[in-house]
Image 1 (cartoon, rainbow, N blue to C red):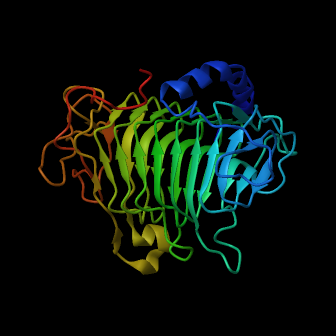
Image 2: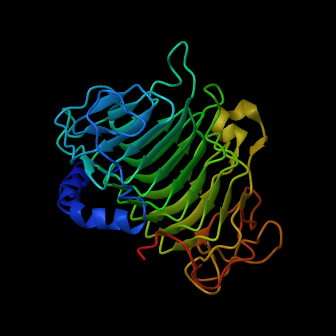
Length: 356
């Protein structure tokens, strides 16, 4: 992850918040005609105004009234959402954690944390239907974190210079991440679960986002299942997308996957490499569905490591012998564990955020 350097960039990002507000308006989610209210609980017609870090414990509509730049963050997040049926609208303002540092030189909390103790409290239950929109989050360990959240939307946001831009943990289900810019962080979007803690993120849609300049663009981690990555620009990352062991049944379609050091890496392992020699030859492997993508060249993806013989598509047998971004090899030598065929020869229409 990028540490002190990221915090320095986040200060520069704050100075650019005016232009980013123009971006948020461009994607059509700012300026919804909301009327400010100042009551302690968000009313149906009068959203609650927020101008500092706070915990939200009641359903309703909340709006940022100005940039928020905490010097300390108590708990899991600057804005900590613990209620169902919440809409948090940043109205283009920035939550900047670069000034809230610990002895290690960086803040360890999230900018926005939704149900951050949702898997640890004795009577924990999922929080339902939380929307976060129109906000810039920078300089935090995690920009926006959803943990055990059932239903909701993250839209028109920008995360930059964070450890993780958007983190969906454990039983995060039915979330849409749309029309957002996720850049210059350790990981742009991270989906991570655990079989003993509500399983993993599922039925998540990641669509029409710009995912750029991260160490890893999108990570489908442990137990991430039945998620769709569609119509994104995944450009200029260390790894465009990675699927980890025990993730399965995910699909990556109609994206522009270009200019990454590694296009898609799907991790297969022998059990003995994970659990020790006694596990024998049991395999943890899954073919990642990634057809209909543009790989940055008309002749399709390349094979990682430039092997003497290119990897074959596991279904069609087509060879990954193009000059585009690379794909990974399965545990069977010479066979890819990413299904890439057929692929697009040109940049897909509608991929990424539209500024129109």
